[in-house]
Length: 316
Image 1 (cartoon, rainbow, N blue to C red):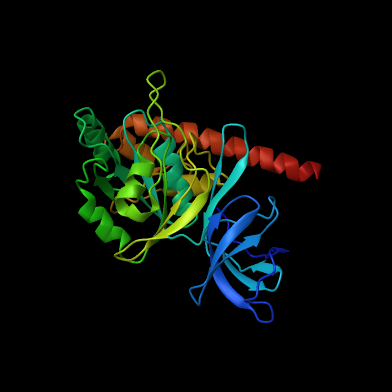
Image 2: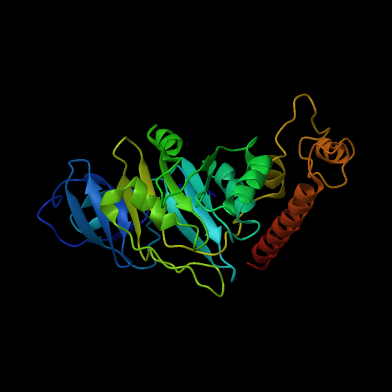
C-alpha cells in the first residue's frame, strides 16, 4: 500500500455544469471507460476516462470542463493476483472487511490483514453463513486465531442474523470495502446492508465449492445509518504488494506485543535473531506453531518480492 502523491488528468465528457469553474467530487462507480462522479452539490455526472487512467472508486477529483484531475489519496488498497498482476481496488478507505465462509482459501485472511495495516486501514473479519452447522467449527477456529488481533463478526446474510454489531461498527462513519474469495456471500451481505443496490448472487459450483463472480464494476454505496461501502468484483487471491519484511513482522496477526515481552531488536524478523520474543512465545506455546509456520511462509514470499524489486531497479 502506498499513499498517492501525484495527480492524474483525463478527458471528461462536455457538460453544461462545471464548464467554467472547478467542481470537486467523488468517484462512486467505475465502468472501464467512464466513471460516475458525485459532486459536493449532490449532482452526478458520467466522465470519460482512459482505461489506463488508474482512477478507482473512492478517488476525490476536480472537474473543470473536459478536464478531470485526481486529488492526492490518503490511502489506497492494492493486491497482487496469481499471475503477478497488481490491482488497485479502492482509494481513501479507512476499514477493510474480510469476508470468509467455508471453502475460503488458506492464507487469504493473513495477507489481507497485513495489507490493510500497512495501508493503513483497520481490518476486521466477517464470518458469513453462520446459519450452516459446518460454519460453527470455522467460527471457533477463526475466533481462536484472530479475535485478539482484529474484530470478528459472526453473521448470516441469508437469514439476516448477527448484523446489528457489524452495522453499528460501519455506521461510525467508516468508508470500507469487503474482500473475499468467490462464494463467501459478499454480494448477499452487501444486499442485506444496502437493499437498494440489488446485486446478483451467484450459485456455488458443486465441483469446486466456489462461487461465480457476480460484480463486474466497482461502486460506492451509502449506508442508511452512516458510513459507506465499496463493492468490487470478486477474486480468488490476495497477494501482497510492496510489503517489506519489517512490515510483515510487525503487522502479522498474532505477533502483536504481548505485554512486556518484546524482541531485543526493533527490526527483528522472528527467524533466527537472538532475543526474539516471538520465537520464545512459540516455544512456550503461547503462539501456536502452525501460526509461526504460516508466518515463515509469508516471510519467504515477501523477501522474494523484495529481491525481485531490487533486481528490477538494478536493471533499470
